[in-house]
Amino acid sequence: MSELTLLILQFAFLALLWIFVFVVVYAMRSDLFGRRVKKLPDAQAAGAAGFPTAAPAAAVSTNAPPRQQAPVPQSKVPTFTPLEGSSAGTHPRATTGNASRLVITAGTKSGTEIPLGTMPLTIGRSTDSSVVIRDDYTSTHHARLMVWNEEWMLQDLDSTNGTFLDGKRVTSPVNVPLNTPIKIGATSFELRR
Image 1 (tube, rainbow, N blue to C red):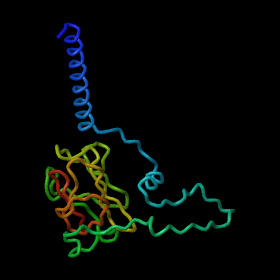
Image 2 (tube, helix red, strand yellow):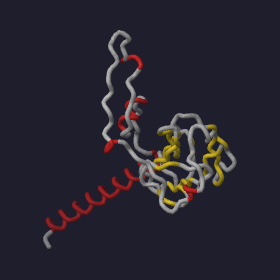
Image 3 (cartoon, rainbow, N blue to C red):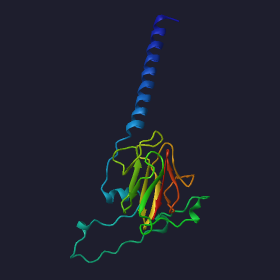
Image 4 (cartoon, rainbow, N blue to C red):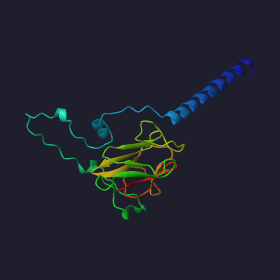
């Protein structure tokens, strides 16, 4: 091989090595600090999640005649079913009327009780989460508990290690039964009366 060919191969290998280093650093940075999440106003956030939204109060005119709302096609109404093989049939679904607290049953914050309202709760390592879990197996924004038609729903936010309801991995929003374990990383919790 000529010296020129050897020099070109050395520079190509060096460039490839630097690309690998940048990819590893970027992956570590996004895993440790997460990606920046742009906060949306409540109405936009609900619409972006695929849920129908109500018109803001400021946009409603008192002089205008009542506006007929178009019916939502049945194909666009989300349906939620309990996970197969879970104990969802043995426990009633958690609703805003019967679930008043989130109880951490295992993990570093075991015994902690968090009162539930009707606002969504985000769970993760990030300090802007409603429930902060400092755990190596928990993503920055790991999961969300939210109210849909007066029932508590659990949604995994594309976490690395997954969210488990009664031992089954959550892949789409599911109803949460009362007193059923939800596991995120090394932390388990339940919705209770």
